[in-house]
Amino acid sequence: MEAEVLTALNPVPNGRYADGTLGMGGHTAAILRRSAPTGWVFACDRDGAALRTAEQNLAEFTGRFELKRANYATLAEHLPAGSMDGVLLDLGVSSPQLDNADRGFSFLNDGPLDMRMDDRQKKTAADLVNTEDPEVLVRLLWEFGDEPRARRIVRVISERRLERPFETTSDLAATIESVCPRAGKRKHPATRTFQALRIAVNDEIGGLRRGLDGALDVLKPGGRLAVITFHSLEDRVVKAFGRALERDYEFDGDRDIPEFRRPCQPRLKRINRKAISPGPDELKVNPRSRSAQLRVFEKI
Ligand SMILES: C[S@@+](CC[C@H](N)C(=O)[O-])C[C@H]1O[C@@H](n2cnc3c(N)ncnc32)[C@H](O)[C@@H]1O
Image (cartoon, rainbow, N blue to C red):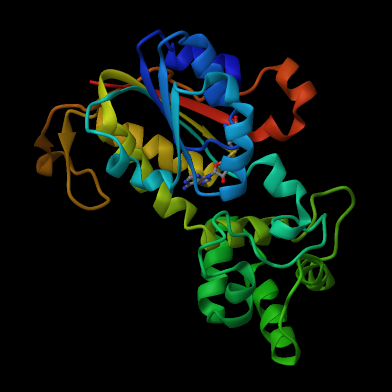
């Protein structure tokens, strides 16, 4: 969604931008090109391999960017408050992560049950599947995978892991398929479990909440935040963040009871009422973008 991101952030010379999800550097390159000759980008990724690839891809812009191996949840530790004209978060996994079987993100390519974006982290998907309390696993599959068959899947995992731990993606996928047969052309029965495990292993929802707060901190008033999500769980978090901060009142807890509202200054405004989806041309060249949703906010 490069064109839509450029429209949202409107990079200009002398502008300062942060890309919290560098990946191969495609969006960072687009921002640097549009803000030439003096625009600057701070970009981070928690995946060391992504940083190495991006550094090569960005060679022509040397001197106009800083790359850091970091979780975007810590953005505010690396950048001064109120210093950025735009922040981009393009969530989820990258194509190299999905396509490299050794990373263990995909059941289509057999590999170790890993799923860590940052390989310095200890906990892998295998650790979760082989040792986590079954009740916790059920909850993860419900919350992070919207998996209606969570109990059935966790039961078969719990029985099987007593005999032999799970080590590979295809072993886990086949075990799930043994109790949730594939119906016609519908998606693979392990899809939701894999999504849930990936989100849990990488603490994606906790990181997103911290990252959104951090992004708002580092933006200048009038600066723009663009967030691309890939599934409804992430999108709900981004939408709720926008809703809460555009209000001119706040409240404690989950329920908004008018009598208990406290007035406050709104901290951002939504630029688009509805999330922006990829156009037909992008879908043709990049079918993986079909579930992408872009939301754009402006700091007040
Ligand atoms: C969809 S890709 C980004 C693609 C990128 N916009 C480009 O143009 O190539 C998502 C990237 O974000 C990284 N990532 C995901 N969560 C992260 C986090 N919490 N902190 C830093 N990087 C993260 C992943 O490692 C992956 O490389």
